[in-house]
Image (cartoon, rainbow, N blue to C red; front, side, top):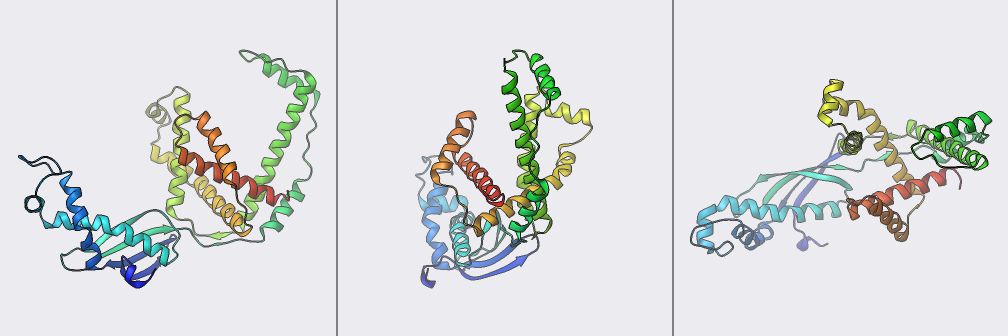
Length: 319
């Protein structure tokens, strides 16, 4: 993008604590005043004035009605996103979440000046993750999947207590229990691998990532409470806690999850581990089929994350 095509000028980028950057820049007069026509059209569609149909108010009457400052603010709303995105591209800033944009100078005939603070994907320094994974796998050893007679008997008793107990042959039940043990051992080993790598990984977590994990945990928590047939306010009242109290208790878990996801993302990038569009589509189809209210775009993003994480763990396990 050459200088004459840019929608901004005088851009400076300053690193802040908490994996954030502060961008200060301006939008040249000729660029941001070029949005005046669209701003007037937008306002025309929202302003109500006796004697005129919405969207058909003459410009001079509209300007007199709303005032110059409202028009300038609407022009700024239109100009700033384009300028901000161009700065991110030109400066190679990996921003995440919504930026906090504030106008620092708004005056007719002058450049539009603004400041934007945004969280960014943090720099991450990984240890020798292959070595750490191999050590944990060696430490875990071969999983013990032997199933005792007592375990089979206990499982059969649990089945009998079910409303409609399924009839499962003893040998098949033994195989199912063995598979459960194998899966549990695999999960335990993966947790050990993740903990070992995370313990030696240096990264400054952005607040937005922690907040995002907390929001996900809260959504799952509220869904579980509702499924139990309990009102959230009653649950909180019984526990003598506020939702904010509970969110604070979740913070260490949220930080751990956010850090692990950054680690898995970085390993995937370094090892060029990717998921094909077909794999994502199949998993997203499955999610949408089972969760009718699921948003397709979010389901696809979630599917890509889950599938990529699985491939990274398989890579670490040497598969």
